[in-house]
Image (cartoon, rainbow, N blue to C red; front, side):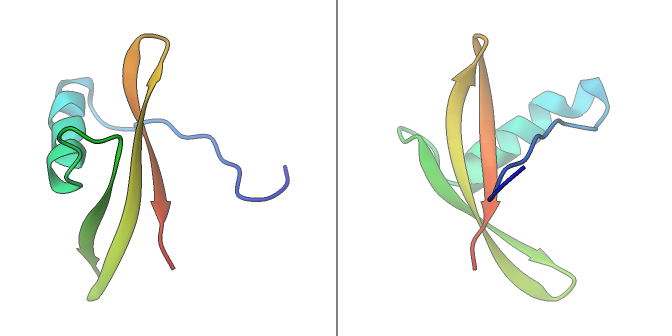
Length: 68
């Protein structure tokens, strides 16, 4: 594969999927928009993650990209 290409999936318990999707939606400010930025502190670093919402096979999906 060339460039910034990747394949993703959620590797969490099925009963937590809705909670995780809601967290991504709310924390990235997607209400009424198709993209936003998720601010996350991890190991003492403040990270910004670009979140883009799209539809895939009739379900909502997200592309998460770490900003530099």
